[in-house]
Image (tube, rainbow, N blue to C red; front, side, top):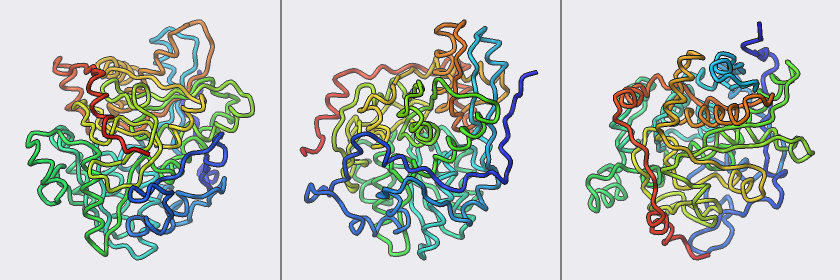
Length: 448
């Protein structure tokens, strides 16, 4: 019998995060102050983020220690298992070996908890009493709700309206951990009221929800803002995934040929892939594949340039692939992938030709998720279904090619069963984003 689960002993937990910034050829462009169009220093961001996270955001140190207090909580579910998807392999009739990192074992059910715990810790350490945040599919909101409960912080979550309606049990989870949730756009912020006045039936977007959370945080002295993806420090915290995977693959004498992750803002893909980047730069033939929805094709059809992270233009300008901060994607069920921008780290890797980007439709991804559930027993989150589908494509291009595929199962879908119900009933549809919609959304990019 093949070894199914590769478990890293608890005493070999990862003790340091890997900072990929020093290793990216030609680096990444600095964030800009939208008022001056000059590089923005940490002092301008201090009202929003704690100093500890700002230091990580701009650090040039390759390795950063994980605080003991953070490790203690991560130990609840880490190290996470690396699993051989042998039943899926047999169903596909492929000679490829397929491994997945199971991030659905965290308390909130996804990889998001890796960064949520770290962010809650650094805020609590600096005397912050309350965090405001956004959430798309509810995974990040659930993760931060868990993390703030561990550190005695209040948590306010602005949840994108379409997901608020689609995923009722995500709200229950957040409430259970003690968080407050409101649909976004809401009537409790000026940003939300302005959006509702223009479009009362809007499904919302992560860009709108970010604006509301930032407005909330900037209006209170006891509150700071927490972001679940995109930023450097979030990608940093997620590298615990890939660092564990490297150790686990080494335990069985395997090296990956292809590494795959779904991409919304980019954190789970960065967390799995970037620890392998030094190997690729040293000449190892590893391919990195980032997968996004065809209805929100940031990397495959977006513009590479400076843009805001939010609709109200409260954030610094980040140099990234973007569909435009005013872009409102269709209401697909992979709510965590409905974001207009891509992490500057991922954008730079794509710019340098260090990775590939592909876009997939939601029906083929739900088909892949259903096959995965029936073979491996785990129902993937709709976002993770994109990685599953990409792994299946890789394994079946040439079924006789004995390659090793590693993908990130970024979360389980047990709170997304309404999505599978609609898929089974034939009520889901694919969305082709017309070129004119992209052109309209990118028309208002800042002139830098």
